[in-house]
Image 1 (cartoon, helix red, strand yellow):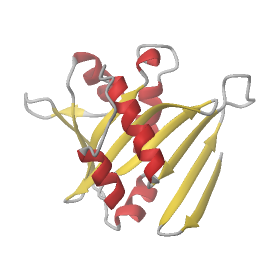
Image 2 (image 1 turned 30 degrees about the vertical axis):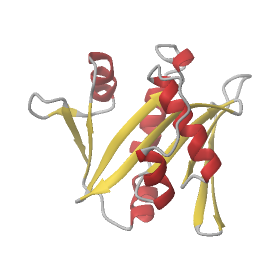
Image 3 (image 1 turned 90 degrees about the vertical axis):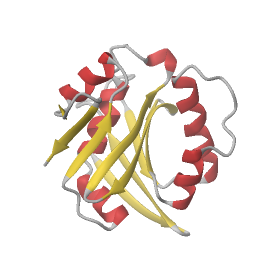
Image 4 (image 1 turned 90 degrees about the horizontal axis):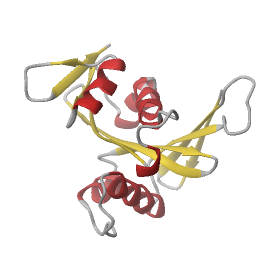
Length: 171
């Protein structure tokens, strides 16, 4: 595993390269952790829309604005150079809110498990997230929207609180 931190203009581009050992064709996965540049925000938003079956162009969305302003941090998963999944997170009162986990529609419910992989990268990046937001993190929070997503989050260590679809994971 290799971690590179490159300062560019007003933001840091943090790239984590990881692969199965020994790597085989198709096993290489590149995960990019960064405050996205405008063209990457659009690409991520387009995938987020497509992942939920919306095939319109994303223009001036709520998350585009939050990513551009630094209020939201985007994690992207690329496989063989193609964007396959993403996750948007934000910070509030010692809690990281996982706002979206999204996977290319063609790769949902496949053995690649992109959603689980991107979620695990977020959960294992506590130090990076604390540095980005400049705050200590005590827990992760999210809301599930289906039984399938609930199972994914439970597998990642989240526990349901109440009956409104809210889940937490503490350190």
